[in-house]
Length: 61
Length: 306
Image (cartoon, rainbow over all chains, first blue to last red; front, side):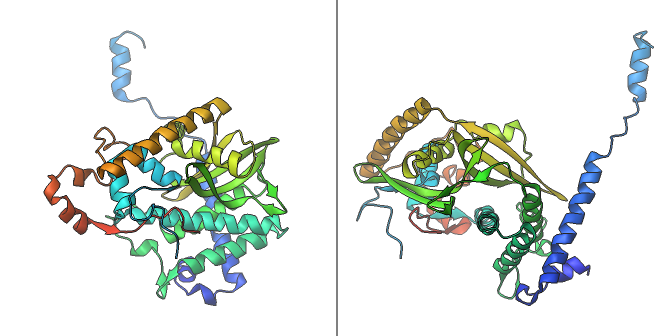
Protein backbone atom coordinates (compact mmCIF):
# COMPACT_ATOMS: atom_id res chain seq x y z
CA UNK A 1 0.00 0.00 0.00
CA UNK A 2 1.44 3.42 -0.95
CA UNK A 3 1.74 6.10 1.71
CA UNK A 4 -1.14 8.00 0.07
CA UNK A 5 -3.42 4.93 0.05
CA UNK A 6 -2.47 4.29 3.65
CA UNK A 7 -3.45 7.85 4.62
CA UNK A 8 -6.73 7.59 2.75
CA UNK A 9 -7.50 4.29 4.49
CA UNK A 10 -7.08 5.78 7.98
CA UNK A 11 -9.82 7.29 10.09
CA UNK A 12 -9.35 11.04 9.41
CA UNK A 13 -9.96 11.89 13.06
CA UNK A 14 -6.53 10.42 13.78
CA UNK A 15 -4.72 12.28 10.98
CA UNK A 16 -2.29 15.00 12.06
CA UNK A 17 -1.74 18.31 10.25
CA UNK A 18 1.42 16.77 8.81
CA UNK A 19 -0.59 13.85 7.43
CA UNK A 20 -3.04 16.24 5.76
CA UNK A 21 -0.13 18.27 4.38
CA UNK A 22 1.30 15.05 2.95
CA UNK A 23 -1.97 14.30 1.15
CA UNK A 24 -2.09 17.85 -0.23
CA UNK A 25 1.56 17.61 -1.31
CA UNK A 26 0.91 14.34 -3.13
CA UNK A 27 -2.04 15.87 -4.95
CA UNK A 28 0.15 18.79 -6.00
CA UNK A 29 2.85 16.43 -7.23
CA UNK A 30 0.25 14.61 -9.31
CA UNK A 31 -0.84 17.94 -10.77
CA UNK A 32 2.74 18.96 -11.60
CA UNK A 33 3.26 15.63 -13.34
CA UNK A 34 0.02 16.00 -15.24
CA UNK A 35 0.92 19.54 -16.34
CA UNK A 36 4.29 18.33 -17.59
CA UNK A 37 2.59 15.60 -19.57
CA UNK A 38 0.03 17.95 -21.06
CA UNK A 39 2.52 20.61 -21.98
CA UNK A 40 5.06 18.25 -23.53
CA UNK A 41 5.24 18.94 -27.26
CA UNK A 42 3.41 16.40 -29.32
CA UNK A 43 5.58 14.31 -31.57
CA UNK A 44 4.44 14.69 -35.16
CA UNK A 45 2.70 11.63 -36.49
CA UNK A 46 4.45 9.79 -39.26
CA UNK A 47 2.60 9.99 -42.56
CA UNK A 48 0.92 6.66 -43.15
CA UNK A 49 2.07 4.49 -46.03
CA UNK A 50 -1.47 4.56 -47.39
CA UNK A 51 -1.40 8.37 -47.66
CA UNK A 52 2.01 8.32 -49.32
CA UNK A 53 0.76 5.79 -51.86
CA UNK A 54 -2.33 7.86 -52.57
CA UNK A 55 -0.28 11.01 -53.08
CA UNK A 56 2.02 9.08 -55.37
CA UNK A 57 -0.93 7.75 -57.36
CA UNK A 58 -2.17 11.30 -57.79
CA UNK A 59 1.23 12.37 -58.99
CA UNK A 60 1.69 14.71 -56.07
CA UNK A 61 5.01 13.42 -54.70
CA UNK B 1 -38.95 19.47 10.39
CA UNK B 2 -39.17 21.47 7.16
CA UNK B 3 -42.41 22.89 5.83
CA UNK B 4 -44.08 21.23 2.88
CA UNK B 5 -43.56 22.96 -0.48
CA UNK B 6 -47.15 22.02 -1.35
CA UNK B 7 -50.34 23.77 -0.27
CA UNK B 8 -52.07 21.85 2.50
CA UNK B 9 -53.83 18.73 1.25
CA UNK B 10 -53.02 19.45 -2.40
CA UNK B 11 -50.32 18.74 -4.93
CA UNK B 12 -50.03 22.44 -5.73
CA UNK B 13 -46.47 23.54 -5.15
CA UNK B 14 -45.98 26.99 -3.65
CA UNK B 15 -42.19 26.92 -3.03
CA UNK B 16 -40.18 26.38 -6.18
CA UNK B 17 -36.45 25.95 -6.58
CA UNK B 18 -34.65 25.75 -9.91
CA UNK B 19 -34.48 21.93 -9.73
CA UNK B 20 -38.23 21.35 -9.37
CA UNK B 21 -39.07 24.06 -11.90
CA UNK B 22 -36.54 22.49 -14.28
CA UNK B 23 -38.23 19.08 -13.94
CA UNK B 24 -41.61 20.61 -14.72
CA UNK B 25 -40.26 22.39 -17.79
CA UNK B 26 -38.44 19.30 -19.06
CA UNK B 27 -41.38 16.98 -18.66
CA UNK B 28 -44.43 17.16 -16.37
CA UNK B 29 -44.24 13.36 -15.90
CA UNK B 30 -40.61 13.64 -14.77
CA UNK B 31 -41.76 16.32 -12.32
CA UNK B 32 -44.48 13.96 -11.07
CA UNK B 33 -42.04 11.09 -10.47
CA UNK B 34 -39.27 13.18 -8.91
CA UNK B 35 -41.10 15.94 -7.08
CA UNK B 36 -44.54 14.61 -6.26
CA UNK B 37 -43.73 10.95 -5.71
CA UNK B 38 -40.13 11.34 -4.60
CA UNK B 39 -38.60 8.68 -6.88
CA UNK B 40 -34.90 8.86 -7.57
CA UNK B 41 -32.66 6.57 -9.63
CA UNK B 42 -30.33 4.48 -7.48
CA UNK B 43 -27.18 5.87 -9.11
CA UNK B 44 -28.37 9.47 -9.27
CA UNK B 45 -27.60 10.35 -5.68
CA UNK B 46 -23.85 9.88 -6.21
CA UNK B 47 -23.62 12.91 -8.49
CA UNK B 48 -25.66 14.96 -6.05
CA UNK B 49 -23.59 13.88 -3.07
CA UNK B 50 -20.27 14.47 -4.85
CA UNK B 51 -21.50 17.94 -5.81
CA UNK B 52 -22.61 18.72 -2.26
CA UNK B 53 -19.22 17.71 -0.84
CA UNK B 54 -17.37 19.76 -3.48
CA UNK B 55 -19.55 22.80 -2.75
CA UNK B 56 -19.06 22.36 0.97
CA UNK B 57 -15.29 22.29 0.51
CA UNK B 58 -15.17 25.46 -1.57
CA UNK B 59 -17.57 27.25 0.76
CA UNK B 60 -15.45 26.30 3.76
CA UNK B 61 -12.26 27.49 2.06
CA UNK B 62 -13.78 30.77 0.88
CA UNK B 63 -15.23 31.62 4.27
CA UNK B 64 -11.82 31.03 5.85
CA UNK B 65 -10.10 33.19 3.22
CA UNK B 66 -12.70 35.93 3.63
CA UNK B 67 -11.60 36.14 7.26
CA UNK B 68 -7.90 36.35 6.38
CA UNK B 69 -6.86 32.72 6.98
CA UNK B 70 -3.83 31.91 4.81
CA UNK B 71 -4.22 29.80 1.67
CA UNK B 72 -2.19 26.90 3.09
CA UNK B 73 -4.06 26.81 6.35
CA UNK B 74 -7.45 27.07 4.62
CA UNK B 75 -6.53 24.23 2.21
CA UNK B 76 -5.42 21.99 5.08
CA UNK B 77 -8.55 22.73 7.06
CA UNK B 78 -10.78 22.13 4.04
CA UNK B 79 -9.17 18.79 3.18
CA UNK B 80 -9.39 17.69 6.78
CA UNK B 81 -13.11 18.57 6.81
CA UNK B 82 -13.86 16.67 3.61
CA UNK B 83 -11.87 13.62 4.70
CA UNK B 84 -14.00 13.54 7.84
CA UNK B 85 -17.23 14.07 5.88
CA UNK B 86 -16.33 11.16 3.64
CA UNK B 87 -15.55 8.73 6.46
CA UNK B 88 -18.75 6.78 6.97
CA UNK B 89 -19.43 3.76 9.18
CA UNK B 90 -15.76 3.43 9.97
CA UNK B 91 -14.69 3.25 6.33
CA UNK B 92 -14.01 5.62 3.46
CA UNK B 93 -16.97 6.73 1.30
CA UNK B 94 -16.53 5.61 -2.31
CA UNK B 95 -12.88 4.63 -2.06
CA UNK B 96 -11.64 4.17 -5.63
CA UNK B 97 -10.41 0.68 -4.87
CA UNK B 98 -13.86 -0.47 -3.73
CA UNK B 99 -15.79 0.71 -6.78
CA UNK B 100 -16.97 -1.77 -9.33
CA UNK B 101 -15.96 -1.18 -12.96
CA UNK B 102 -19.69 -1.34 -13.67
CA UNK B 103 -20.23 1.75 -11.56
CA UNK B 104 -20.90 4.42 -14.18
CA UNK B 105 -20.01 7.13 -11.70
CA UNK B 106 -16.72 5.55 -10.64
CA UNK B 107 -14.79 8.76 -11.38
CA UNK B 108 -16.76 10.42 -8.64
CA UNK B 109 -14.80 8.78 -5.86
CA UNK B 110 -13.19 10.01 -2.67
CA UNK B 111 -9.63 10.35 -3.98
CA UNK B 112 -10.75 12.25 -7.07
CA UNK B 113 -12.85 14.55 -4.90
CA UNK B 114 -9.82 15.45 -2.75
CA UNK B 115 -7.63 15.88 -5.85
CA UNK B 116 -10.23 18.12 -7.50
CA UNK B 117 -10.53 20.32 -4.41
CA UNK B 118 -6.74 20.75 -4.01
CA UNK B 119 -6.20 21.47 -7.70
CA UNK B 120 -9.11 23.94 -7.79
CA UNK B 121 -8.05 25.82 -4.67
CA UNK B 122 -4.47 26.13 -5.94
CA UNK B 123 -5.57 27.24 -9.40
CA UNK B 124 -7.84 29.95 -8.00
CA UNK B 125 -5.65 30.92 -5.07
CA UNK B 126 -5.59 34.50 -6.40
CA UNK B 127 -9.04 34.34 -7.94
CA UNK B 128 -9.78 37.33 -10.20
CA UNK B 129 -13.45 36.85 -9.24
CA UNK B 130 -13.69 38.41 -5.79
CA UNK B 131 -16.41 37.35 -3.34
CA UNK B 132 -18.77 40.23 -2.62
CA UNK B 133 -19.67 41.13 0.95
CA UNK B 134 -23.06 42.09 2.30
CA UNK B 135 -23.38 43.51 5.82
CA UNK B 136 -19.86 42.34 6.59
CA UNK B 137 -20.54 38.74 5.47
CA UNK B 138 -19.15 37.04 2.38
CA UNK B 139 -21.89 36.29 -0.18
CA UNK B 140 -21.33 32.54 -0.22
CA UNK B 141 -24.01 29.80 -0.12
CA UNK B 142 -26.72 32.39 0.10
CA UNK B 143 -30.20 31.20 0.84
CA UNK B 144 -33.00 33.11 -0.84
CA UNK B 145 -36.77 32.97 -0.83
CA UNK B 146 -39.05 35.59 -2.28
CA UNK B 147 -42.63 35.80 -3.47
CA UNK B 148 -43.34 36.10 -7.16
CA UNK B 149 -47.14 36.14 -7.03
CA UNK B 150 -50.12 35.05 -4.94
CA UNK B 151 -48.13 33.23 -2.29
CA UNK B 152 -45.88 31.45 -4.80
CA UNK B 153 -42.21 31.78 -3.89
CA UNK B 154 -38.90 31.07 -5.55
CA UNK B 155 -36.21 29.71 -3.27
CA UNK B 156 -32.78 28.14 -3.31
CA UNK B 157 -29.13 28.87 -2.81
CA UNK B 158 -26.58 30.92 -4.72
CA UNK B 159 -23.11 29.39 -4.53
CA UNK B 160 -21.31 32.70 -4.57
CA UNK B 161 -21.79 36.31 -5.67
CA UNK B 162 -18.62 37.85 -7.05
CA UNK B 163 -17.19 40.96 -8.60
CA UNK B 164 -15.39 40.20 -11.82
CA UNK B 165 -13.73 43.12 -13.57
CA UNK B 166 -15.92 45.47 -11.53
CA UNK B 167 -19.14 43.76 -12.60
CA UNK B 168 -21.30 41.63 -10.27
CA UNK B 169 -22.03 38.01 -11.23
CA UNK B 170 -23.48 34.93 -9.60
CA UNK B 171 -20.96 32.08 -9.69
CA UNK B 172 -22.37 28.60 -9.97
CA UNK B 173 -20.22 25.50 -9.46
CA UNK B 174 -20.65 22.36 -11.51
CA UNK B 175 -18.88 19.01 -11.43
CA UNK B 176 -18.98 16.75 -14.45
CA UNK B 177 -17.21 13.87 -16.10
CA UNK B 178 -17.92 15.43 -19.52
CA UNK B 179 -15.28 17.30 -21.50
CA UNK B 180 -15.47 21.03 -20.86
CA UNK B 181 -15.92 22.35 -24.37
CA UNK B 182 -18.49 24.54 -26.05
CA UNK B 183 -20.86 21.57 -26.26
CA UNK B 184 -20.87 21.36 -22.46
CA UNK B 185 -21.34 25.09 -21.85
CA UNK B 186 -23.98 25.56 -24.57
CA UNK B 187 -26.47 23.74 -22.33
CA UNK B 188 -26.45 26.72 -19.95
CA UNK B 189 -27.55 29.42 -22.37
CA UNK B 190 -30.46 29.69 -22.34
CA UNK B 191 -31.09 27.70 -19.20
CA UNK B 192 -33.72 27.77 -16.47
CA UNK B 193 -31.21 27.68 -13.61
CA UNK B 194 -29.07 30.53 -14.94
CA UNK B 195 -32.10 32.82 -15.38
CA UNK B 196 -33.49 31.71 -12.01
CA UNK B 197 -30.26 32.66 -10.22
CA UNK B 198 -29.95 35.96 -12.03
CA UNK B 199 -33.50 36.86 -10.96
CA UNK B 200 -32.82 35.69 -7.39
CA UNK B 201 -29.71 37.81 -7.10
CA UNK B 202 -31.46 40.86 -8.47
CA UNK B 203 -34.60 40.55 -6.35
CA UNK B 204 -33.49 38.90 -3.12
CA UNK B 205 -30.10 40.54 -2.76
CA UNK B 206 -30.68 43.72 -4.76
CA UNK B 207 -27.49 42.93 -6.64
CA UNK B 208 -27.83 43.85 -10.31
CA UNK B 209 -25.77 40.94 -11.60
CA UNK B 210 -24.92 40.70 -15.29
CA UNK B 211 -25.50 36.97 -15.33
CA UNK B 212 -23.83 33.79 -14.12
CA UNK B 213 -20.27 32.52 -14.28
CA UNK B 214 -20.44 28.75 -14.71
CA UNK B 215 -17.41 27.46 -12.80
CA UNK B 216 -17.06 23.88 -14.04
CA UNK B 217 -14.79 21.10 -12.84
CA UNK B 218 -14.18 18.08 -15.04
CA UNK B 219 -13.26 14.91 -13.17
CA UNK B 220 -11.32 12.57 -15.41
CA UNK B 221 -8.97 9.60 -15.14
CA UNK B 222 -5.74 11.03 -13.71
CA UNK B 223 -6.68 14.69 -13.77
CA UNK B 224 -9.22 17.38 -12.94
CA UNK B 225 -9.70 20.39 -15.15
CA UNK B 226 -11.44 23.70 -14.57
CA UNK B 227 -13.07 26.03 -17.07
CA UNK B 228 -15.26 29.06 -16.47
CA UNK B 229 -17.82 30.38 -18.88
CA UNK B 230 -20.14 33.39 -18.79
CA UNK B 231 -23.89 33.41 -19.26
CA UNK B 232 -25.03 37.02 -19.66
CA UNK B 233 -28.62 38.05 -19.04
CA UNK B 234 -30.11 41.36 -20.16
CA UNK B 235 -33.08 42.91 -18.36
CA UNK B 236 -35.44 42.12 -21.26
CA UNK B 237 -34.34 38.48 -21.18
CA UNK B 238 -35.14 38.39 -17.48
CA UNK B 239 -38.55 40.00 -18.05
CA UNK B 240 -39.27 37.37 -20.68
CA UNK B 241 -38.22 34.58 -18.31
CA UNK B 242 -40.52 35.97 -15.60
CA UNK B 243 -43.40 36.18 -18.06
CA UNK B 244 -42.80 32.56 -19.07
CA UNK B 245 -42.49 31.55 -15.41
CA UNK B 246 -46.01 32.78 -14.69
CA UNK B 247 -47.31 30.67 -17.57
CA UNK B 248 -45.41 27.62 -16.29
CA UNK B 249 -46.84 28.14 -12.81
CA UNK B 250 -50.36 28.31 -14.26
CA UNK B 251 -49.66 25.06 -16.10
CA UNK B 252 -48.44 23.45 -12.86
CA UNK B 253 -51.66 24.51 -11.18
CA UNK B 254 -53.70 23.08 -14.05
CA UNK B 255 -51.85 19.73 -13.86
CA UNK B 256 -52.43 19.61 -10.10
CA UNK B 257 -56.15 20.37 -10.48
CA UNK B 258 -56.45 17.63 -13.10
CA UNK B 259 -54.23 15.32 -11.03
CA UNK B 260 -52.43 14.47 -14.28
CA UNK B 261 -48.93 15.33 -15.47
CA UNK B 262 -48.50 14.53 -19.17
CA UNK B 263 -45.39 12.93 -20.61
CA UNK B 264 -43.20 15.06 -22.88
CA UNK B 265 -41.88 12.28 -25.08
CA UNK B 266 -39.52 14.63 -26.91
CA UNK B 267 -37.46 15.08 -23.74
CA UNK B 268 -36.79 11.42 -22.94
CA UNK B 269 -33.42 11.24 -24.67
CA UNK B 270 -32.03 14.68 -23.89
CA UNK B 271 -29.06 15.26 -21.56
CA UNK B 272 -27.92 11.66 -21.56
CA UNK B 273 -31.48 10.39 -21.18
CA UNK B 274 -34.17 10.83 -18.56
CA UNK B 275 -33.80 8.33 -15.68
CA UNK B 276 -37.49 7.48 -16.06
CA UNK B 277 -37.48 6.72 -19.78
CA UNK B 278 -37.53 2.96 -19.15
CA UNK B 279 -40.50 3.44 -16.84
CA UNK B 280 -42.39 5.56 -19.36
CA UNK B 281 -41.66 3.02 -22.10
CA UNK B 282 -43.62 0.40 -20.12
CA UNK B 283 -47.35 -0.09 -20.10
CA UNK B 284 -49.07 2.15 -17.52
CA UNK B 285 -50.25 -0.64 -15.24
CA UNK B 286 -46.77 -2.09 -14.64
CA UNK B 287 -44.91 1.19 -14.11
CA UNK B 288 -45.40 1.29 -10.36
CA UNK B 289 -43.81 -2.15 -9.96
CA UNK B 290 -40.79 -1.11 -12.07
CA UNK B 291 -40.44 2.10 -10.08
CA UNK B 292 -40.41 0.17 -6.83
CA UNK B 293 -37.75 -2.25 -8.01
CA UNK B 294 -35.41 0.17 -9.81
CA UNK B 295 -35.83 3.42 -7.89
CA UNK B 296 -35.75 4.60 -4.32
CA UNK B 297 -37.81 7.20 -2.50
CA UNK B 298 -35.87 10.38 -1.78
CA UNK B 299 -38.07 13.34 -1.19
CA UNK B 300 -36.89 16.59 -2.73
CA UNK B 301 -37.94 19.58 -0.66
CA UNK B 302 -36.84 23.04 -1.85
CA UNK B 303 -37.48 24.35 1.68
CA UNK B 304 -34.90 22.15 3.39
CA UNK B 305 -32.08 24.36 4.62
CA UNK B 306 -28.55 23.20 3.87
